[in-house]
Image (cartoon, rainbow, N blue to C red; front, side, top):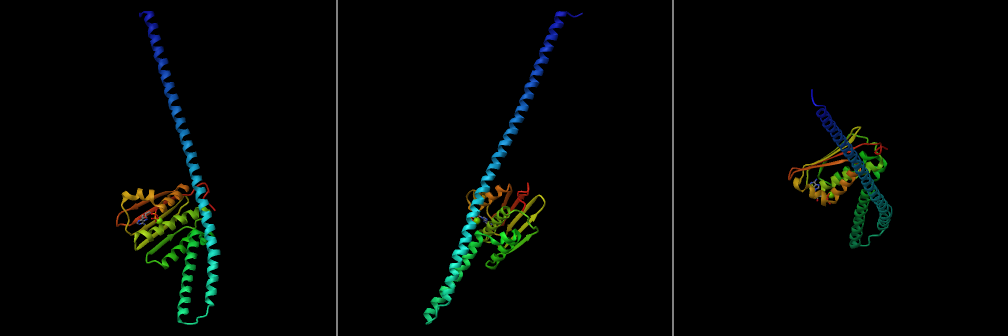
Length: 268
Ligand SMILES: Nc1ncnc2c1ncn2[C@@H]1O[C@H](COP(=O)(O)OP(=O)(O)O)[C@@H](O)[C@H]1O
Ligand SMILES: [Mg+2]
């Protein structure tokens, strides 16, 4: 028979250990639940912050675009029309001698070139084809105009109708415009391949050139310093899209953009 006092002590020790264990479990459970709530709250705050930043980006892009449209339309309507009127007047000037003939021809040529430049700049600022006919037609038109004055061979494959709202189509158009400009201005490439695919979930844009490329190490610098790439990134962030640049010195550049289609925000 064991001593009742000893049994009582054992019960007491066992009871205390049990209480301590329960307490420890309760504290750990509380800690885990608290951590989970904290993490959930942090994630919620981060999402609010991201949404707010995206909204801000969206606002600043849309203000910028409105200003571009206004300048583009003014250029086209005011300056373009005024120059055309001047050209009509110049056309009526009589040639009195060889010298005046040369002078008037020079003025006519200068005016024609300036009218064409104004039209190109106005169209870049306000892509009227995009507003009227949508993204696919606007890109085809843009590439056609560029191909007429460039030796670069551009292949473009678009297998989508892009039933997107105007802001989305404009953002994608601006991104493609800048990427194509970069190939023309910096790559010294012979071939440019542009692919745009749309699935139910996303749009995939691929721009690949066989030009001079650049070292992978300087991609971050380019992203930090280049205004064009920065503006692409701003638009990419506003659409919650992702941008991947793959380039190698003397081995061309590949740019891939993945644009998720969500919430119907992107729909017409
Ligand atoms: N396709 C390309 N091939 C080679 N270099 C490129 C290409 N695209 C961009 N770059 C390099 O990245 C730099 C930054 O581009 P960007 O941000 O568009 O600025 P910008 O065109 O005004 O120089 C360019 O100056 C050029 O050196
Ligand atoms: Mg550029």
